[in-house]
Each structure stands twice: as structure tokens, then as C-alpha cells.
Amino acid sequence: MKKIKNILMLGCSLGLFLTMGSCNKEALIKVYTRDTTSGTREGFFEGIGFNDAKKDNSLLAKGYVEVSGNDTMISGVKQDENGIGYISLSSLKESSLKGLTYEGVVPSEENVLNGTYQLTRNFNYCIRESYSDVAKKEIVEAFISYMGTIEGKSTIQEHGGIVENSNSDKSWEEIKDNYDIASKDNSKVTIVVGGSTSVKSIVSNLLNEFSAKCGNFVYEHNPTGSGDAYKRTNGSEKDGVNACDLAFASREFKNDSEPMDESLKGKMCIDAIVAVVNKSNSINSITKDQLKKIYDGTYTKWSEVK
Image (cartoon, rainbow, N blue to C red; front, side, top):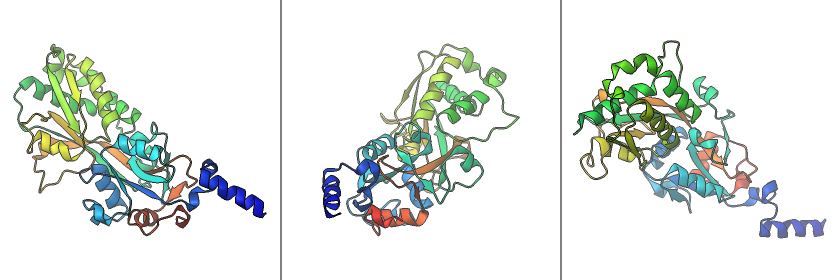
């Protein structure tokens, strides 16, 4: 028995048994978080009851790793067998990470719509109050309408967004005559789109398919985070080199610091935030209380997460 125990301990020190979960339980937890401008971060910490940490890294567990986007969060946890992070459900399928059951409920579109999965937030958009080019304004307005069509909703769902379908939903063919811009040659018009990194896949695919339906307009999609959505459409950078014609946020816009008329913003879809770990980790489920204790440093080892 002593010989077997020594072999197991040696295997753990060499990392040989991690894929079986033999050593992972005794390993130190490595916490990954998004930067303080992230809408995903805001939604996550609000959801687990750790509101004070939305903008304050000093409250996080010792040794935390801050990342700047959804993709870098995925990359970090994928390479760290003891890491834990949080990403958009829309990114989970292609992430190669393990999404954890939250409060006994599997993160899924069905469970978000039926209200049983509680760690959710909205994906929102905002547009400029004024445009230098009327063609840009008309293309953006047509695109907003396209997101609510049967085709638009289908693309949103296909790439992880969650929408409620209705029998009254129209196809683009049924509404396109309301947008004269769609019948023009827009190949020399460039639409700049930015904001949340969590909506990257959804928005990129929507833009790609809608360009062909709206005069082949050119688009530049450079998502840099929810904090830049208002800033680059109607805020301090709206007339600078980073200005956007359309932008997205994976959180609600703030009435005090991001003031906009209601006509300039709206909801694209719903998303779930999912706590994720490396696939070699043996843990499969997590609770709200456990996540808070992991992120505030109360739990430092995986063996404490029971």
C-alpha cells in the first residue's frame, strides 16, 4: 500500500494523473477574470452576489489572472488545468472548455428561456445619434431590423444567442422594401462595428450575411469590450479614430455615465454566463456560494469545493 501511495504521489508531482482528476482536487485554484470594463465581468459578479468586485480587483483571490476578452479567457483556462473562469454561453460550444452546471441547472438555451438558469444577461446594441454619411445611418437601421427577422434570429441562435421566436416574426423578404438602401450598391460604404467581445461570433455572422442582402456594404468588426460601445458611438471617442457606427454591450447601458435616448439602444438577445474549467478538471457543478468563495479567496484549493 505504501508503495502504491508513493507512486501516486510521484505521478501527481509529474502531472501524470491530472486527466483522471486524481490530483486536481488538491491543486491550488487559479482564478481568471475579465477586466473591469467588461460586461461579462459585471454580469458574472452581480449574478454570484459579489457586486463590490465588479470594478475592484483588490477584492479578488490572490494570484488572479486578468484577461482582456472572451477569447483570451478561453485560451487562458484551456492552458491551465487548475484554472476557473467565466465566458458567454454563446462561446462555450467552440471553446473546448467544460461548462459547469450552476445551482443544479445545466447552462442551455432552453433553461434560460424557461427561467431555471439564473446566471444571465442581455446582449444590447447602440447606434450613433448622428452620422456624417446618410448611407451609413440607413444601413445600420436596416441591420437593426434584420436582427429581428426570422433569418436574423436564426443566425443569432445558431451562434449561441438566445431569442424568443414569435408567429408574428417577419422574413427579410417581407420587410426589405421598407429600406431603400438595401436595393442600392453600397460596396463603397464601410460600417465600423465594435463593443463587446462576447458577441463577436454572432455579430460577425450577422454582418457577413446581411452585407449580401444590403448592397454588399463593407464592414470592419473590431470588438474591444463593452466599455467601448457607448464611448465610440456617442461618448468621448465618437469622433476619433476609433469611432463606431454600431456597437454592442454584454450588459445594460448605464443611465448616469452612458446617457442615450431610448431610440439609440436596444436588446439583441439574451445570453447566459457560464463558469468554465479545463476539461481535465473533475468538477462538473458549482453553486453561487462556491463561486463567490472561489473568487474572494475563501476557497484556495479544489479540495475545498465540495
